[in-house]
Amino acid sequence: MSAGSYVERTLPEVVQQAAERYAEHIAIKDGDVTLSYAALNDARMTAARAFVAAGLKKGDRFAIWAPNIYQWIIAAIGAQTVGGVLVPLNTRMKGAEAAYILEASGAKFLFTVAEFLGVDYPGLLRDRQLPDLEQIVLLSGEAEDTVTWDCFQGLGENVDASVVAEIAASLTPQDTLDILFTSGTTGNPKGVVTSHGQNIRVFETWSATVGLRSDDNYLVINPFFHSFGYKAGWLAAILRGARILPVQSFDLDKVMIQIERDRVSMIPGPPTIYQSLLAHPRREEYDLSSLRLAVTGAAPVPVTLVEQM
Image 1 (cartoon, rainbow, N blue to C red):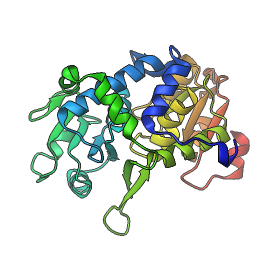
Image 2 (cartoon, one colour; image 1 turned 120 degrees about the horizontal axis):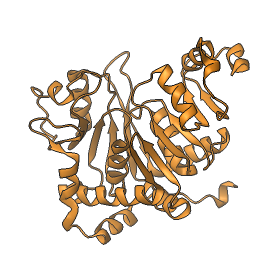
Image 3 (cartoon, helix red, strand yellow; image 1 turned 45 degrees about the horizontal axis):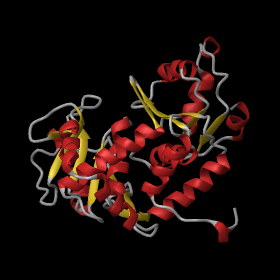
Image 4 (spheres, rainbow, N blue to C red; image 1 turned 135 degrees about the vertical axis):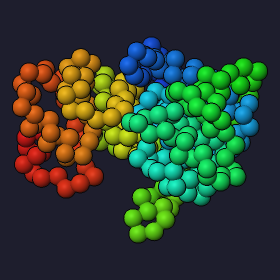
């Protein structure tokens, strides 16, 4: 496609168009939950109506502090549909670290989980002063002083879909889509602001370059809080109509079982994941023949590893 013929899009346009093009093709399979692209679009609209009812306005920040689960994606695209700005939080952060980003970003809403890998996420923030934070919503589980995801979604019952459609139509590719904070290695984390059109064009190009296709089963191992799992992960999958298979926590044996069971064709990850797969003592016991595409990075990649892959 030539530069002159490229048409910029917003996130709600991307999801709507994916639903129209791929319809009943499976968008997400997460444990017992399976959503088609049409169902994902419906879920996006339900969430967007709830965000409108909750008072989210264009440009308001909302944070997600949770592992790779399907609700993460629905919450993100629901809020982004009505102009919300996503602020992902690293699931390994402690309370003070998460509180700093919540305060620095001015996030009005936090979407998290009651517990993950033994960590009580709401508990980590219980004694923190966060004047901008209006509500904590749990994507899974229950905890005091929080709202469940189902209750939050119920807020939108009296919001007409036309209201969401009008807000979504007012968004432009230049509007802010998200703010990803740096690790803060040599100082406090800094927020990197990017737009709808910027993200979509970059990952349309990336997904085309690596060869991601609509018939791919994409095992998203990389965390959604990172651009690798979010933008090169589920966003790229939606852009191409691929099936998203979220992985909450990497376990080599479970991953090999899932590759065989779900006929996984695409896996991403740092070099250590592939080194572990290649060195597994029982690798020959698993049928990994469905794999056709792998992307790696985030660390030096030895030439010998590429050859083995």
